[in-house]
Length: 332
Image (cartoon, rainbow, N blue to C red; front, side, top):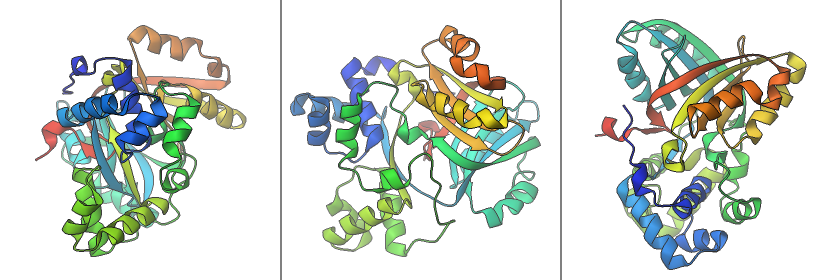
């Protein structure tokens, strides 16, 4: 289901450039080179190759509401069909097919006043759905845009983040949008749609598409990012960073230890995403490891397990959407 080409990622510098683009997908090659302490010509050549190959995709995603995680149990042979239907929703952030109790998991952004319709009407109406689990996210601890796989130093991360709009902080892991699905103007929608296809397109290109001046395009994008209404992100397959084994962890802890367990999970370079959710298990984590032995060690020997009451592990069989971007074979 997943198409990956790890051989095109040459070495650790390629991986560090990828990590830099995860911090700010629109960072100039000059800023990336300066932060990483590498020759700009080398960074331009390698970064351009990674983008041209499609291994790294930069796109914008409009924030459409508050996050809700959905687990789905499917009729036999229908997991791919259901996951594809979820992935094609414009409000879907990610969609993965899993092993275990739930055949697929997805995150959607849904204003809370529309959650009842999602739960009672839209999800049960999907062909192949047998049972659903709906877990509104109470707080993000880490999302994919904060994950850098431990490949950059704190100094490098700070240098790259320094040039980003304040939105990177305003939309940080432990905050949810203050608004709930507010509509954008027509010109702003054109801007976001253009960036969804190419998150690194120039301000001149944005201005021509939106019918505004370059200064206006720059100002509007900056405002949307500062407000947390639009997020520009790099989307990659973890296998490109040497982490081909992905798993979803469903973690339950005693209430007094939830913050401690969440914090410990967020400190691991193998945890790409962790959120507080409603339900029996308070924490949902998306993880990536170099091999199954490393996953086994993480869920049997990590210090945070002393405060966890239970951990369920589901392997990721395939990803149909990451970071609001459909898998390449579903586009078009």
